[in-house]
Image (cartoon, helix red, strand yellow):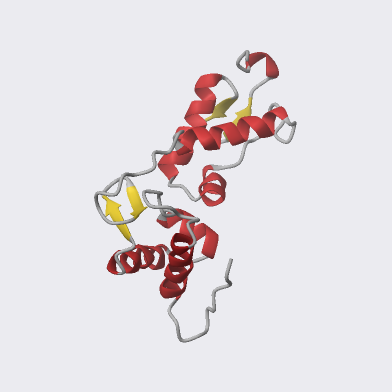
Length: 161
């Protein structure tokens, strides 16, 4: 991964767009694949949301990607078949937390990572982080104490596999 030159003459959004263009050219990001979200770009490159938005605009102007309102930005021009994500992002996040619980990294009656931490770590919006926690709660992995946080449930409450 190239380092960004934060003090040079090339704007940050152009530098990030170049990195993504290289990923597309190399096949690392194939046609129909989702380009990292604004939140993911923000987290990965330490850039502002407006800068991340300009990255997508720049890639569209270069005719490398297209954006579908409410769904994301995808490699290729409009009409290229999209690669379907096999699992919803919130399920991937929830499964990551379950794995950490099973390994003993997150212990019963101890807090799980905050929404803000999940948003940063996974490059997702607050609604996605909330949905992951709600999914864990529905399954019995965690419980929430209003105004305090969300904690790992006692093993007796965990779902039977």
